Image 1 (cartoon, rainbow, N blue to C red):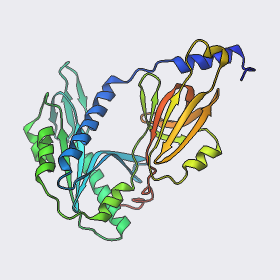
Image 2 (image 1 turned 180 degrees about the horizontal axis):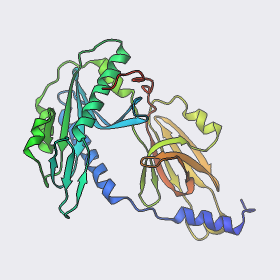
Image 3 (image 1 turned 180 degrees about the vertical axis):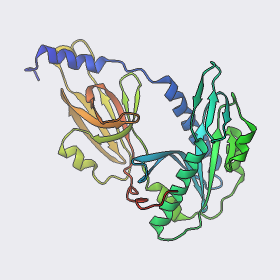
Length: 310
């Protein structure tokens, strides 16, 4: 470590101290999704509803994976939920495109919101039936949840064939409806899907996507192989002026269920991640990472590969 060039020490120290502020616009939507999931768990507990956030399902037709904001399982019923936390107002045109009119005077075309979530719901049920090897008779319902009180709806939103609720109405549905005896195979299907990997940078910026390689060597790769729980990590970075000269490595703590591992992060270590919205994977220096939360690996990526177009 003492053989490092001063320029390397300087670069490493600056990386550890660099502040990456959160993306407030996207963060507001994420917090709204987290809030809805939290209160849904509380509201649906009595009637046996099971809540799954940010479910990602394979899409052989379009490539990659599609995300569903919220999937709720109860009895032999699936509630496939698209949440919108818009403010202002919106209209639905003849092509069923949702056009938002923001209070600052701008507009945004959110495309065919209802058609897209309806397609995902059909794909999800088809994948479940494929996994169990039969038509399981699942009652699937598409729900549009508009959770911002400062949003005016058009009357024709009720003509789309989906359930449309505000936050209070959605919670009331979970509190009042008893879905009956749980179909354990349906619950197992949902438990087999993964969600996003999250890497938080120093300062609070959250990167969501797929971590492809931790870049920490075979020992870490083998240690987490075959895990069926999320992998969480936190990093302690030396940031004092003194650390510029001594250059001690950062310390990584990894937790997967009851299993725990510590690792040192010397200069130059990076993880490889495909961040949402980026065309190609990128290398993220470990010196810029504050924490990580990696999804339980999906067991269902092989499903839906031969589905006809929904």
